[in-house]
Amino acid sequence: MSPTFLRTPRVARASALLAVPVLALSLAACSEDPNSIAAQAKSGSRQGYISGDGTVETIAAAKRNKPLELSGKTLEDQPWSVADQAGKVVVLNVWASWCPPCEKEAPELKDAAEKISAAGKPVVFMGINTRDNPSSAIATAKRQGIPYPSLDDQDGTMILALQGKAPSPPVTLVLDPTGRIAARVVGEVTSSTLTGLVDDVLAEK
Image (cartoon, rainbow, N blue to C red):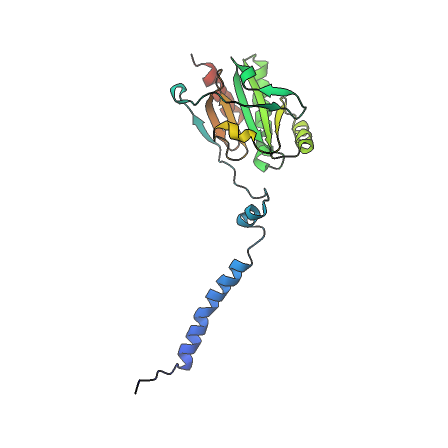
């Protein structure tokens, strides 16, 4: 005759206690916090996205990729292209009105652009307003006092022309006079950092 094992009350209670955390985890997985980054990503919301930390990358002239093939129209419907800026250093800032770090860095970009312009340096600033509403973008740029225009990139296709260097706004790129990416800042940029990067590229022979 096979032995029969009886579950004592103590064992039964232990099993029940072990089952509680498992059940809690299962319920938590089914009721994901709608405010979490994961939930926002699934819903397509831009809230809670992760921006860069201000990392600076410089690229030696011998290691730079081919010139950017970037062209389009500004928020004011004016044509613009990197190719037309040949011989000048170009600063491209990828931004959006829904991007909090972009809002924080705006005064720094304004300061750098005004100082570089006042010094008469051969430098062109251009924003790339991506995945945004043009009306909101224009109002935001005006409120911030940004002294340069921005390209209208509502569908995000212009970002594809940046050779994978702009994962999410804000990103600032510095192009050499031939249109190649010489430096970038992933995340918020400061005026001093940007003017330093521009001066370095201008000093190249």
